[in-house]
Image 1 (cartoon, helix red, strand yellow):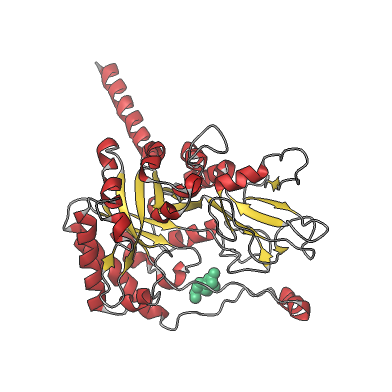
Image 2: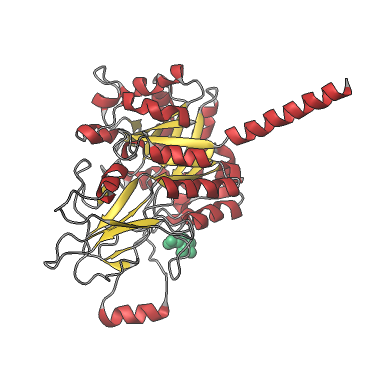
Length: 433
Ligand SMILES: *[C@@H]1O[C@H](CO)[C@@H](O)[C@H](O)[C@H]1NC(C)=O
């Protein structure tokens, strides 16, 4: 009898332990603008299915804010709502087949480019916030979403300036990492955001089980805009997009690791995953609410004859790398576009790019090819692969954080072009969690 009780107790303990493991979030983002791409790069809702068993959340992006009214709206009525595609309904209907899945609607996400000042203005006005909150809850509820992800478009920190000649020498000596303020009304926006989170949570709570997530977009300074103790109890998670610290748009003349876990030597001490996480933890966020974002895409730059031939970052560059065959965007490659550049080329063709891994597992992987004697064809790529995504998941596990997010599914290898698996980055990260 006693033995039975002991065994029963042990089983309960095992079940509880399993449950602890399974509560790690895997938040999968689907940016619907993938729809406009061609063939191999166009991720349509049915292509999401192989990913869904690995995701706890599917977040559909991106809704926007209507200028003037400040209502939360679909930015593509035709794709999202009208009966031809009805993406909102299609996406939330996945819950029938995957009942464990929560499906959220994200707003902002650096995808809402019309009149970007409206995000600041909204925070300054009680009336605007109310319009946003009320319309947002209705929009989410009408289409069967389980909540809202606030990927708020705050002003970004300014990139470090690259100087040449004497200036370079001088600043190199001083080693200053000072950044100029970009927002004259920082404290007003901080208070406005706290109010927005509180008000949105209150409205979502009136409906049973609607979640509220906050996503901190790349290069948004949480120290400025997030009053952690004041908002953390109102959110189900905070998703830190701790990547894109360097991009060819922000840093034309210098490439570097875009998403290191820890700061490499002589870099800005705050521009890495660990620093982003530490800010939230030290400010009082429970670790289990913190989610670490993993980008599935690469940033690319052109190398020229002035680039250091060892390829080691930070490295001199000449603007954004050439567009990839599928994504067709300067300075950007999807993971499958990178992996195809790494495969040995057919005889007679130019050597492909060379991958350089980081044995310390702290900074990430890059790959490069020097320019030829005419100065053409040079490229430098910072990217995430299955190994580095796994390292980020390890970091999350070791620090007992809440989980990971994959940003986004459309840039992972959802067509199995690299290896024998669909969504290798998502799967590798999930496996190590
Ligand atoms: C973020 O803001 C804080 C407070 O103003 C500042 O000390 C810090 O340097 C900023 N971080 C970045 C990366 O600009």
